[in-house]
Length: 525
Image (cartoon, rainbow, N blue to C red; front, side, top):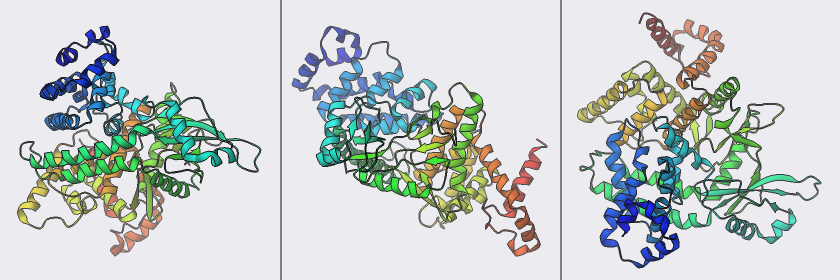
């Protein structure tokens, strides 16, 4: 009967869902679980999310998802199964994929990341983008109850907190309800939001974390079968688990928010919401930002969207890489639901608000200088330059053994050969995957920055399809170099300083010469 339901879901219209759920809950269907999960997986269309280029990963994703589902609590699994098969038979695949991921925070977080990946087909991208802040799995009543219980009667009364009558936004882990409050001694009320962890999420993430541990062991035991080589699966899966666990540690996010606010306090281009000190472990109370997802900014106005795109690239890429600070700070999860266009700002119509600081990174100047060299290596097709600065990506010493060193050189060569029309950050992302497969342990903050830039590239493409991330970054770097010309001229006279990287652009005169020569020679092709 279950197979009939899975293969012909339109027949379910004749049976109330509650009856079906009661029946399936009462049946010992372990004998048929494997084929039912197989049908469920393929009926969901979730494998269509895998971009065309890395289709070799389909078996890994397929078996990994089956393993995950097989170890999911039966009640949760039946919920997912019924949500999917009770969809109208003509539902688009994007809707099926969303139902597959519903109430499963790990899947929803991965969906958020892929939602701006230009390698994913456009209709699926559009569906996944709804995971940024328009999920609908939480009950307004249960969220209000959580907020009131966590803040307590004294805080609610002292600040006269009044909650709105609906959910403002909902993401994979948390939901936001708009509110207003009155600070003691003030006449005007302030608009705020209460961000609360959804009640079911604590149990879900705990269970999913345990499944991830089991999945790690499974793939570690079957490395050869899946042709995974020396890929550091344990580190990769633990990164996923850690990022999900961090999502429910609101104290950490609140500390990050305070740090980001201090870092950006003198930057008028960026707004970081003010955090209220009576926030708790379950509820974050912060300033309400009147804005919209940056991907929706200036809808229908190509000129202003193009300006917005360049502003986004400036504040989240150029200003980070060429920061004057010894240690730059960057947002680690800049999907469009976390990056807002501030509305009706009389001083700056293109001001950007950065929300949700659950994940952020610190980027020391020496690492930024090496990243620039890595990007030059890709831009100039210079394998030697890439090899020389690979330590920025990899923890520990690079191999001295001739065989391992030759294999590393081959990895770099293959990366450059496969570059094609991909951006520098995409190519670095590919290099990271290849290094991981070879067993290298990567530096988390640099890998996080590169991944964040791939996400930003997806938003840029939506705002202005003509803007090329690499070209714009190069233009900004060239502007810095021009301002440095007097100092550079002096350093050309003082030969020992020819290779100095002590400029704001962190490019030496030798680097500038190499780029200029490449551009000059390019005119003849």
